[in-house]
Length: 193
Image 1 (cartoon, one colour):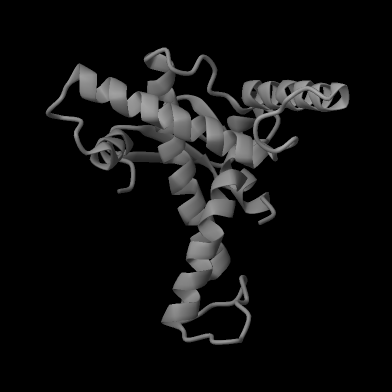
Image 2 (cartoon, helix red, strand yellow):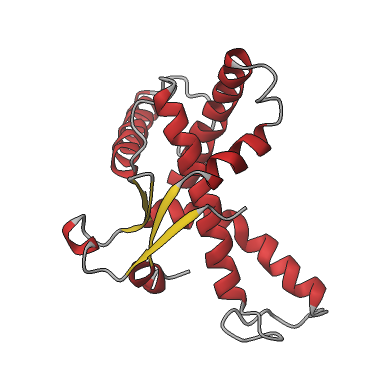
């Protein structure tokens, strides 16, 4: 499931690209630290469960930085979160190409989120009808938008080529194999989990 080509950069070239808030590039599209952290939040429970089951932790808390027979929970969490963020970005790239999502960079998403929150606060203040909770977190909004766009993309792929795209997960894996991915280890190391 690893991409066919991963290029690790030491940060020298990267300094010219942005402000050190990007953990990787996927086909030249950035994965912002926040996008990475969204995926880390989703993976955290799975990693915890894996270690709790495999090492029979019982009531003992998981020590994220300790080694369990050579496996370090924090590193596994980072690895899984990065793979998940890469899969998300590949899907977003295809969504943009298909006209489903206009912008796929974090800053555009963040501006859209701030605008939504501002509008919802104003509606709540005016006593207008709000659907859903009055306020949602940035991560909840990201997951909401992304899941709706995945449904649209799945429909589009089925429409475009009925036979090849019946298994969406296999399509995503195929996209990963052909991707050019640049991981910025220096940034990834500094991310607080």
